[in-house]
Length: 560
Image 1 (cartoon, one colour):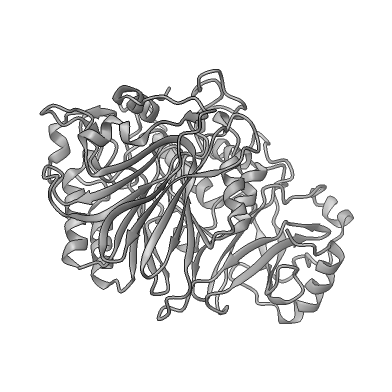
Image 2 (cartoon, rainbow, N blue to C red; image 1 turned 90 degrees about the vertical axis):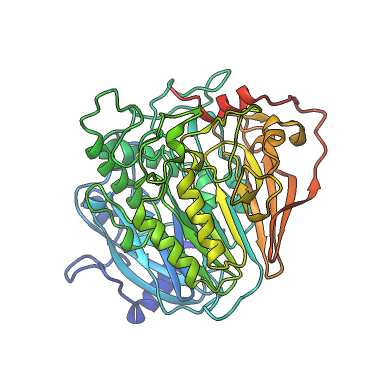
């Protein structure tokens, strides 16, 4: 964190005022100057304490800028979802620095935190230098936010240096401390991808781990805008999550729990149970998601719709195709869970929808990147859990939409994508896999690679085991690694190879656990498939168990 004190921020804020760049949505004429506000003048309008309780964030970088985010909330857990803020706008000063100590202001401006958007702020920066670090923060009167770090991508014609990219998913607040977020922040990555289940919708004592949850959600199951705002605030108030957001820009996509478990388009998890408010619930969830994420204006929701799939280019090194496999999918063909389902192979069924699929295939055809990376939610490779002739697979994953998967795989082959890599969350375990065009032919060539991040906390501590002994790996020889501990994946992306360290923390039911690398895999340029280069021996002090098919399925799918 910066050593810059409040007085220095006041001085640099005023000095930069004359050259401030005022973004779209900036303070209107006649609004108070946030640099001139005092605690007394703010208190007279209802702002009496530090409103920067939810931290800061940046996201969606390109070669000349990124998005800055914060949300004002002096009482984050207020039941009405308003964060203890009065129903009036507040001008907020933002500043971007060239140095970590905040001595060189390179850009500043004023924007408005409006009550209509939960007093959230989204500032889109342009005309910054490419491929370099910046620092930023916000101010309202005497109240100063924490410092955040961001960086711009390399120029579109440049590869830049090695990219340190991490990806995460599945953070159930009740199941454990967010230690993995803190350890990830300590890694100082250039970019973080969150692949869904950023928050969970359940009320307390609903989704429990063995031995009981270690902390509890506030409020009822999330259904209204107030509920979702309160839940986002509870998560954002966690100091470990704040540290990860402040450490680097994020690329975010949702999965199901940001709205409702296993939802599909306009269909809730259990359509047989009447939920007449589901579309209004979806609208509320989308609005709260935008309010609480560092997203560009192109993702502002419009009613029940929100444009979340998008493409982010990191120079010539990598193109990130961020997918949305929830909003446009057909309903699960045979319900949720693992099943031998004839509908899963129906060529008319899609997990992406036709428009997103066409967008993705077009992106493959026009890509000149060294690495084309799909940031998405659910398991891509086939995972048959039956050793016999039946094919029993997860109907909520790409296995429930086989034709979708084949069209997209064929699409990157036809486009001669140099290095296709799929990144995945959702299943609360680390996995690594080769990708095939035809999974019924195990001798066929590998045509891509999949890396799957375990959960941040969902499922509690988990347990270590011998990854090679997992029965899924015997039934599906293209699956190469499994680990049921909590953590994240840290990658180093270079022109010649991508290196992936599967990081784990042994306990999340106790705070401040250390992190270690359980395994390392390498994907070489123009050599699809994953190659293991390191495997940490089993820790004799940890409880070790052999995972079964039944236990794996239970850990993935057991819900209230």
